[in-house]
Image (cartoon, rainbow, N blue to C red; front, side, top):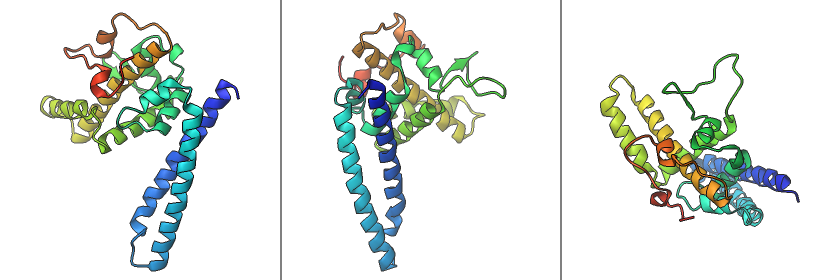
Length: 224
């Protein structure tokens, strides 16, 4: 199987597994409902979904064992193996010579100090699927109390007191954005190193431009 075929197969399997998890979650309220028939069916279908999930996970593990970044990424709390597979299937790291280029491709670019937005008539310059996946990863990180939540919580606190005109939805959205941008910067650094690609000299300044530098190891990434 060619490399591209392998990645496409992995992506399809990962998407299927994530959709199955959504189905199982949707069944949860019905597993112990007052209607015995519905409860029994819900538990039976949940069991069947679990079996297929385990088979899919086995396939994903088998076909991703020779893709180091997938297994390393999945060590970070909040990033599941299927999520890692989907990220790798959507990103060609050799085409992101800088952190900012990966940010832009993921829909987190900045122009004139403001977040880039899609404008009518403009050519799409980012991956809608990757941006959506990043939001899923952010939600997963929050649910499992990932180490990246330190960035999220600190940012919420900062914007709450320093952006008084923002409503809380805006504050939480900005905190999500910052958390994912730091995670993407760590992904970029680790992946480029693994593939023997260059890492730009002003790396710390490129990812932050602030006083604190977050190292990948602080958040569960192995030393590469």
